[in-house]
Image (cartoon, rainbow, N blue to C red; front, side, top):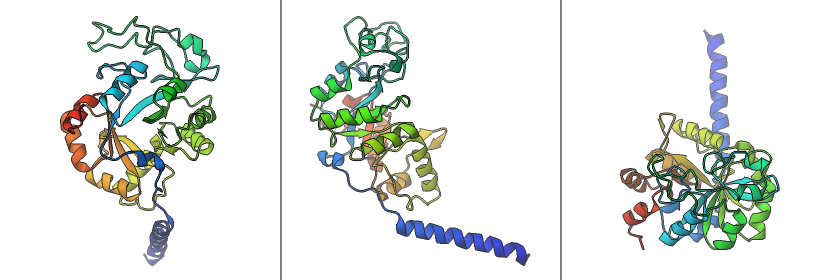
Length: 298
């Protein structure tokens, strides 16, 4: 029995030592200037909805202009890159689910994607009507967005993993001086790693696997040793049947110097719950409802 217990005890001691050392050596996320532009919380983040919950089709100038007119804190959008190197707004890597065309954006030119009706498939009543179809709404470029909203805080989510758009996106952000205005998330670990290497001065959010790692460590009370390479956790309330956002998770996130942005929240009861928990931002298809709840409606 002693022969078995001694190696187990040694392993246990080593684990304790490693955890202790990592706690001592790890650092929380440093402060980032992206967050300096906000004076009140939670942030009202207008989510680029393509499912008909929002009053306007997401990832269009119509959506961005109306959300900005409401007075939201942050405009959220999704980006891909055309074959001729232009960064455009679209929720998916293909045009199939939003436009009257088909194809992968990276295989198309800007002229081809902007020749499509970007609001063609947008409906609020399961296809009974398509209120913005044929209204001349086209897929905007990110450059157009930067030119139109130079002072607005933005979440610019990378959807495309290959070909890499890390350097072109970074170049565009730098060209328009948006380094302090933009935070960049992506579900892709590859896209996120490439962008951080290309543009270290721009704030990023955790990728899917980084979120999973932090959530698992948080549940095991081991999140303190994490030195995050990101500045925000953008997560749903639940994922795969597991409740992610809890008071403990919010506290752990804040202890590591991170903000927590919940998505996509349209239920007023869930909004209230998250506000009480102290989340830093709420992504919603109904920013009008959240602004009214917070007493910020214009």
